Amino acid sequence: MYNRGGLVTESELVVTALATGAAAGLTGTPHGVVHDLHAALREAVRRRLAGGGNGVRSGYAVRVLDAYDTDPDVWRTRLLQVLASGMEIDEELRAAARAVLRAQRRPGHITGDAVGS
Image (tube, rainbow, N blue to C red; front, side):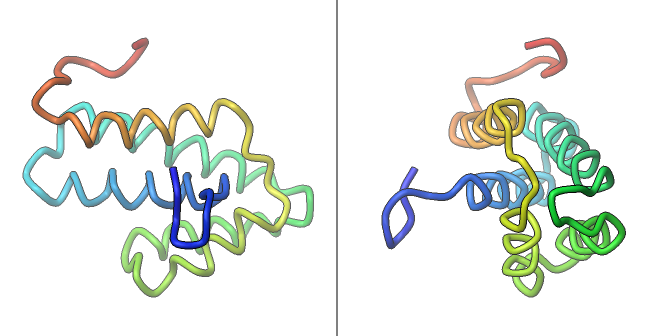
């Protein structure tokens, strides 16, 4: 995945997937696979942020994630900063973010329950 300046950072990948999944919920598919994958990604990010460590203030970080849900345009930069400030974005988070983005690209081709897939 690329942004205007080159490769997308891991933080940008996660934030883009969070935005994509949230937008899918607004387009009339709140109980679809994209929604389920988004919910799983968001919960994984929340757990990591709540754990703190690595320079991440857990209370502030979770508040930024919650605020991002209400107004992504305003809070995108702060969420990127929080994610890039030391939270480890491991393979689980990268895979969850990619799954949201893949599912959103092919909404007519993915059906069923995302749990365990």
